[in-house]
Figure 1: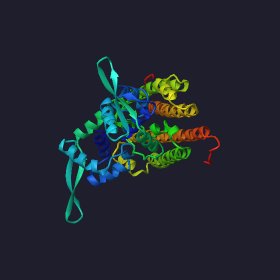
Figure 2: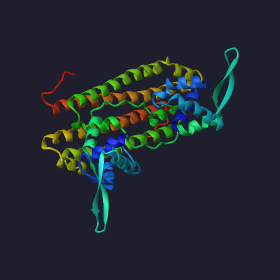
Figure 3: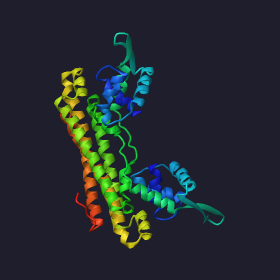
Length: 199
Length: 199
C-alpha cells in the first residue's frame, strides 16, 4: 500500500508516462521505498481506475502514442492525508542481526567474512546516498530540480530540507551498521585469541 | 525462510513442545526476527517432515500427550551451514522515512506528532531491549540460562557475547532513530518560525 503513496509523491512533481514514472521512482523515492517495475505499472493502472490519476494519450514518435499519468485533485488529497497520518510500526525482522547472534556456531573465518561484507555493503550505501543527498542540497539532482520548478518559491527551502533530512537518516543508519560490524569484528577476534587476521 | 533458522536456533538449546517453542521464540530470537504463532506451528511440522526435527510424544497431564520437538543432527548441520553463509541484502523499504521526506505536505502539527511518536516508539524499544541485553549479560534471562546449561563451559563466554552484540546493535539502531526524529522536530520548527511549540 505504501507503494501507492511513493508513486503519488513522484507524480506530485508533474505528469509522467509509466516508463518515466518507473525510472524517476527508482532514482528518487525508490531509494527509501524500493519496488520493481512489475509492481509499479499495475499500481499506476489501479490508481487511474480509482480516480487518483488520469491517463492521457500523448504522442510518442511519429506514429504512436503513450499513456501519460497526471495526478488528480483526489490523488493530491489522498497523498496529503497519508503524509499527515501517523503510521504503525512493523515488528523487527533483521536477518543479518539474527545470524550474528549465533556466531558461536560460525567459524571465525566465516564470521569475519560476513561482518566485512556487512560493513562493505553499508559503506557502498553511504557513498551512494551521500551523492544523492548532496545533489538535492545543491538542487542539481534531476528529481529535485523538476520538483522545484513546479513548486512555489516559498516552499523550496522546506522541500529540499525534508529530503535532505530523510537521506541524512539513511546515511546515519548505514554508518551505524558499519560501526556495528566493526565492533563485531573486534569481538570475533577477542573470542578467538591467536586466530586474529589483519583487517 | 529465515523463520526456519530462527526456530532451529531456539531448538539448539534443547527440545520444546510447539507451544513452548512459540513462547520461547517470542521472548528471545523473536525480538530480532518476529513471527506470529500461526507461522511457527506449520514451520515446526514442515521441519519435522524434512528430518530437521523429530517429534516425540511426551506425557501432558494425567491423560494426555503432547508433541515435543528435538533438533536432529541434520537440523544442527542445516543451522550451522546457515550461520556460516553470507546472506544477501534486501532493498530498503522504510515507510516512516518515506513519509518524512514529504513533510512539506504535512501541517507542522502533524509532522511534530508523527516525529514525537517515532521517538517514543524507539525509546520504548531501547528500554525493552536494554532489559533483555542486561539479563543476557547477567545470565538471568531465561532463554540464555537454558542455553548455557546445555553448552560446554568453553562456549559460554562467546554465547553471551554474540547475543549482547546483537542487542547492542538493535539498541544503537533505535537510538539513531530517536536522534533522527529529534533533528526532524528541530527542522519542522525551523521551517515554521513563529509556530514553535514546547517539546
